[in-house]
Length: 371
Image (cartoon, rainbow, N blue to C red; front, side, top):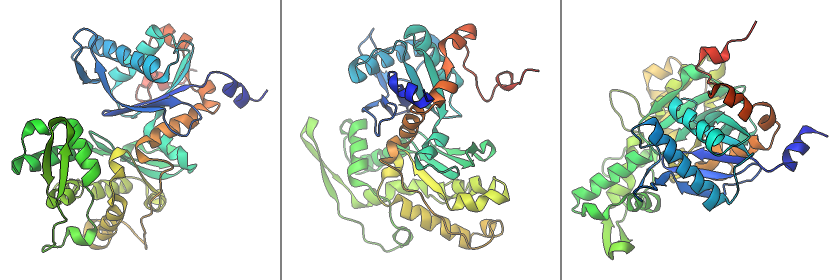
């Protein structure tokens, strides 16, 4: 019997992508997550809600992960995790303590059969069935850039910066407070809704036009308080400018992309220029890809630093995500869980219980070949 038939005859593996703001969850071989839920946990002791990764000690983190996973299994997925296979989509530079604690909760508390950790940038690219690309992940707390060539992540060219959806929401809050809006009205859910419903990215020409007319204001109703606040047109078009902000650090999103490409060897740069893949919830804002392409072409043509290091006629090209950008990495994990990799590359329960340690690419002991 072929291996893939035996994989699909078993219970489908559970695929989890636990982000800083939202968690995507579902089963392997499905085209979209069953649920997208906030990465928050309700404490059983106090009943208060807090972010999953807001912890003081390792044991506190362990208890919060156990409570969070119980909510996933028995409220949302409605399955028993015992003897199930799992695919966990993770940031390859994520915290080791979170990885180890998550594995301990799955193997010790929930008695799962195996766990496969997959890197988010690489697995997101697999949804396109292409081996090479520059993956730009605009998340909640940070933006990360990882070049991938022939299925291999170029770690030395990895770039990240602390602007993401959270920074945009903080800018919205700052500008609304300056207009006199009461702070108690601007809850996190309201700020996120304002960001999604009213804000957009300016075109390149309009962004640098000095005497431009502001777009119309939007009246936004807050149902819980029966209040209506006015969203200025200048706010709607300006909050995303922090991704393209010009400063002496040269750490805006276009600069980070170009620097990541320059940190790769010369023979792969053209391939990366022509295969940029933007994912993450922050990538869903209208106008982002068009503006990003224009910014990159402008820097390439007018910035002496880049003009002397990139050669030939280069045109930046972008892949379109299959489905929505906010769950592209989860979709890659779903595809991975439907292949024989779940059988051959997973960390089994027996292997984990021998050492209670998750092998890590950054640990020399885990990567040393016996001989």
